[in-house]
Amino acid sequence: MTDQGTPTVQGPGDERPTGPEPEGTAPEPSKGGTPASEKAQEAAAAAAAKAQAAVKQVATGVWVDAEATENDRLMAALAYASQIIIPIIVPLIILLSETNRSRPFQRYHAIQSLGFLVAAFIYEIAAAIVYTILTIITLGCLGLILWILFFLPIIPALYYAYLAYQGKRFDIPWVTNFMRQQKWL
Image (cartoon, rainbow, N blue to C red; front, side, top):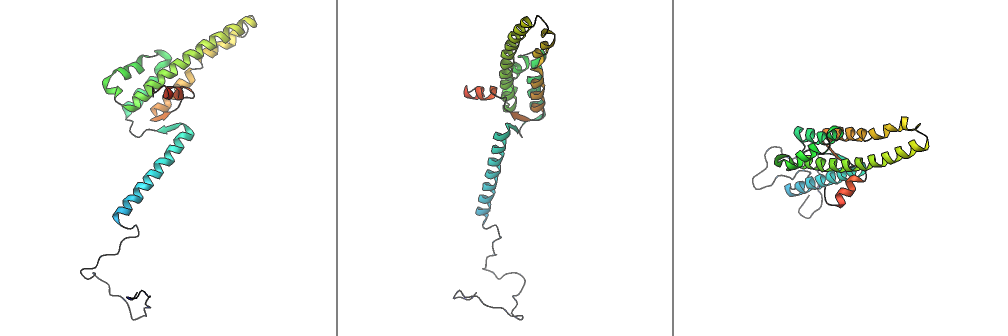
């Protein structure tokens, strides 16, 4: 371009010299722009990725916690799996132990597993009522089959233990929402 702003046409013999630029001239900025704008673009891309992950998290209700260590994942899985054999013990150990309580992943799953335990207990009461009524109505015939109702909470407990061991945080339907409303989670 010339000084007036009109473009100049270069012919075959009007090649620019290659080599170092003369002193006092600044190098051309890269396609990304200035370093400040590159940082702004990176920040915007990171924010967009975080927003997209949040949307995915809300849609599925399951998300991976990148900060969870192997010990965190094991203790979180034990919080759910122990509900089958010795309820309350492992979540209480996690919540009462100073080192474990300070770990957000362990704390989240310990509290949520206690909520799951309460929900399973309510289910067991309802199952006992249904079992008793249907056994009486059918003169004991359905009692031979309906005993399986009492073992159904084992399936989600093992599934939640598996998800926790995978390093995932997840929502238990109704339980997690209730616990968040009460500010327990």
